[in-house]
Length: 539
Image (cartoon, rainbow, N blue to C red; front, side, top):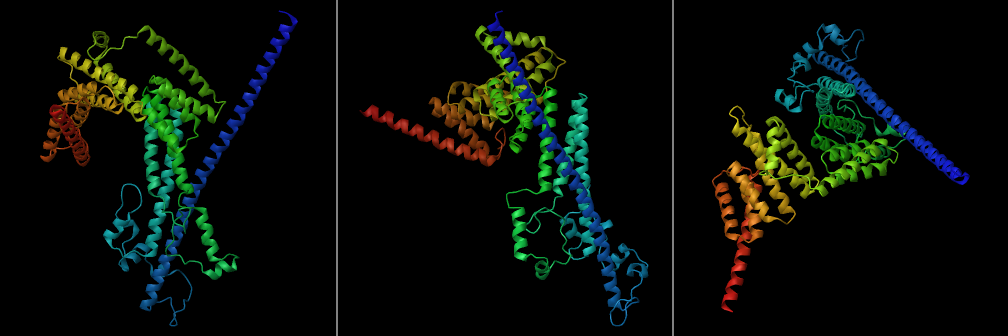
């Protein structure tokens, strides 16, 4: 190596090292920001729990005060002891202590049902309709404060349960116990649902969803003026705190926790070999938080495992745009590129991937257990559904065809064995797969004959099916088979008129609307073509 070559090599090596140092500094900076955000979220969770616990204690105290006032007022009306003739209190012990009765006994004396005897659900506070069912006017302010205190306390407990479930699930996931982690995360989501159901309604006068105090006296305008603020100014500030499109701190906390749960559940699905379910979980995360790099990278990994390399590439490009130093994104991108090259090589060499009647396909399937084939059938159908929702109809069609082929192969193997019984759900998946293949071809506006064939297969496999007849009629209209299309539509019309809707058709009203549109279109095109034929004959 000459001196000039050595200097060039040494300079290149130095630049590489400098680039690595710069990248490491960016990574450290990003990790620091992530740690700050996580600490802020934890502090917010602790603050919200503390606020709810303090609010519950405050409401209980106010309930006791209101109970004392109510008993004192009742004694005053009856002219009992402890009150002078002029109506002024003589002081001394509380009225309830003088009377020697508890708050519940005092509530019974006034005709109100104590809070401890109110009908309650298994979780959550007594509902308003349950209050009304007992007596809409029998509840004192003390009872209302007590019920509200219980609701706030339950809300704090549900939030703590959700946090504990999230942390416990993360520990299980670190230990590679993904099935157990999923169960814990699912339970945490239930606690989160209960927490959000107990959130107070948000109004301009209550911008943070704090517990309402109906019985508490409101501050007058003179009080606000003495504090240096006008009442109108206070109201304007409250409106600015929470415009109609903004969420409160408690609502945002619920959204953040739900995002974390879905992200962790998606990771468990991915580790358990269910990329289709994982992709749906990550999709929810991205709808809530479009800048979540982890969700973009994880969803790209789902598509890579489903051999949808173009979709994986799009997600990885987005992840790198958000964070250009994310090492997970680079690692997944490298694997995606390698798999894409392998896939293209297989396509060039002619990889065998036959249809449902291909002998090669049946020979491969016969070597597998029927359980493996059924699992493959379900997985192919789920992957096709995910891809169909992304509107990649050609790729979705291939997945649905594989699902139908697996179902057919499983049926052929079960027919040879008298000890093997197929569940009814497999035949339903086969029918649905044929219908989805037809839908993909119709949406792509091509291969209408293939769509017609798959609708016919769905009818043979599952019997009468409104959706199969509707889609086959649409394909036959495009093929010019108007009489056959009208016959299919008339069969649907007869079934709907006889009250037999819903057979593969979903909502009856929607099926009826689709039927009428297709019937009018088929008859109109047929009449127009008939008029053209008659004109040509006369000419």
